[in-house]
Length: 451
Image 1 (cartoon, one colour):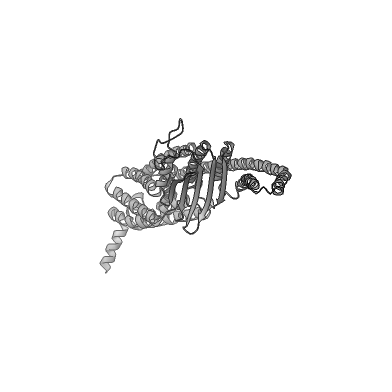
Image 2 (cartoon, one colour):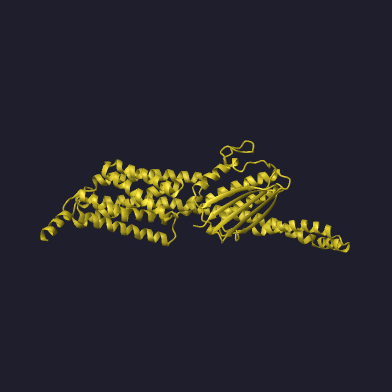
C-alpha cells in the first residue's frame, strides 16, 4: 500500500505530460466544453435542445482531442478555431456574426483568465512554466480554478440579462464591421497564445499584467462599440416606430373626423331607406358603411401596444399604408404575442415582408383588390398561425413553382423572394408554410410550432 501511495505521489508531483493529456480528456468533456456551451447559450441567447447540446459536446470533444494528440502546435489551434466555427454554424444555425463571436469569445475569455492568473499562480507557488503545465498537482487545480472563475462570470452575465440577442437584427453593413473587428481580434489572440506558450516562463510579472490590461481593454472597447451600435439600432427602430404610429394616428384622426362629420348624413340616409321600406338598398348601404368602419378598426389595431415588436410593427404599418395607397382593402386581425414567437425575429420579418410584398403585388393586379392578414395563437395545436390571403388575377399560378429560384412575374426582378423563404424554412424544424388557392383568394399560412 505504501509503495502504491509513493508511486501515486511521484506520478502527480513530477513532470508527466502524457498523463496530463489523458487527465485533460475528462476535464475537457465534462467541464470545459459544457462550460463553453453554457457561455454560448447565455451570451448569445441561443435556444437549443438536448440533441443539439449532445452533438456540440461530442463533436467538439472529438475534434479537440484528436487535434491535441495528432496535430502539432500551433496548427492544432488553427484547426480547433476552424472546427469551432463550422460546428456552431451547422448545429445551431447561427448567422455569420454569431458564428464568429461564438468561436472567438470563449477562447478570448479563457485567454484573458489565463493571462490574469497564470503568472501570479506560478510566482506564488515558486514554480516554472514547464512545471505548471506538466505536473498534475499544479495543472489540475489551476484548470479547476479557471473553470470556476469563468462559470461565475457567465452566471453574472446571464442573471443580469447581458446577452447579445439584438445582433440578429443588425443590418449587413454593421455586421460586416463587427466581423472585421472580430477577425483582427482572432489574429491578436492567436499571436498572444503563441507568445504566452513560448515566453511565459521568462516574462516578468509586470509584463503579464500589462498584457492582460491590453487584452481586457480590447475586450471592453469591443463590447462598448457593440453596445453603442445596439443602442443606436434600438433608438432608430423606436424613432421609426414613432413615425409610423404618428402617421397612423393622423390617418385615424382624419377618418374619425370624417365619420363624425358625415354622421348626420349617414343617419338621414338610413332613415330614407327605412321610410321607403327599401331593405335591399339598406343592406347594400350597410355593407359599404361596414367597409369604412373596418378601415378605422384596422388603424386601431395598428398600434405598438398590440404589435409588441418595433420591427414587425414598422413592417406591418409600412405595408398597410403601401397597400391602401394602391387602392387595396386590407383587413388585419392581430391576436399574437410576438415575444412568444418561437422563431428568430429577423427571419420572421424576412418571411413576412416577402409574403406581404407578393400579396400586395397580386392584389393590385386583381379586380377585387383585397388582402386579409391574421395573426393568432392556435392553443389546441400549440402553434402560432399567420394567414395572408389576397385576391389575384392569374388563376393558373402553380403553388409549387413559385418557390423555385428565378421564378417571378415581375419585370426587372430576380425571383429569389420565395426561394429565400424556403431556405429559411429548411433551417427551422418547427416552421411550416402551406400555400393554397381558391377561385377568389390566394393563401399563405405560416405555422410556427412552440417547442
